Length: 507
Image (cartoon, rainbow, N blue to C red; front, top):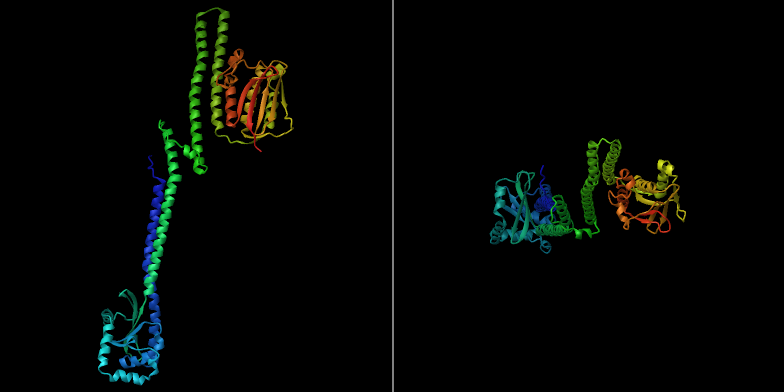
């Protein structure tokens, strides 16, 4: 199944786009609801004024005509404090009262109402002019609402903008106890609503722009410092998988101390380990084929001679050679298979805190029952450190360290003369423990003693069929797995060989 690849950055940007779209939708809904809500609040206050006015009209038995309404406006002016304008209409839609044409200044009310009304009633020339002014102040759309009886039982809210000023008007039908029907309209200049809406819009726009800038900066940072390096690591692994000759360099990522650096180091270490394993597998196969080729050639030659000869002694000698070569091949294949199994299991096993003294004692105790040791009367001694320390703790795999010591003792015992001694000692250094294995055998004839750790190397011609030459190579691999080192040398003041293993200590 082919899985379509999608960049994390694209997913991140798409997620942000969807999030911003949803937030934008809710923002538009919110902004569209701000002005109606504020207008409704103003209209609610208007309804209170209308209700109070209607109650006063009924309580004072005021008729819905021009004279009685004007008298009421003068006497009940306190009802309309804080209101820009209140208008009264009769059932025909004619304006019968308007607070805009009344002088509500306190100096006016120092005069008697009778004098005020005399001026209004006797000045016939001015009355038409005032009525005309009143009529001009009436909005035609409002008259249409009154005449169409739209305001049956509910208030009608009207919003309009006149010369950069915003007005809210509330129109509602009223009915007196005398069954007279009229209308009251409260008008109020509400520029603060437009200001409040604008402030909220500006705040939201600034907030959105700020968030967008932050997301953009974060996206750039995310792409440059996280997604970009991860992408280079992906290309690096793909090139390794496809065995491409053009590798993506990840040296910059290796220098980082954060999680990306740790990931790059892990990938690099795993890659190098896989390459080492592949190289070892390839060379192992080549070396094994080379090692098997010699006993196979000997086996073939002995078989051909065995077929042609009838001499009993020669046939017995040839049979011994054949058995010897078969044993050699069997040993090579068995040890090689075991080595591969050990390497596979080593990669799966977890390290823990182990005590070298305990491991050495366990192995030495097991070797006391070795038939060859009992036959040669070889003694194995563990020399304790001079400081008398009983615990030498390292981070390792206990059974693998036992295998290391067992292989070294096995080599020493096979070369040790009768009635000799094999010594094991631990030296406490500053950052590591040095484990030394000494024997009294012939030592190493090689000038470069490191060659003994190579695969299939053996300097034991007398016992060639019993040793595959893989034991010391396995020891070296296990030691290196524990971040240690191993070297071989001849003893300086005594005949014999000496193997030194350095392992890092832990507290």
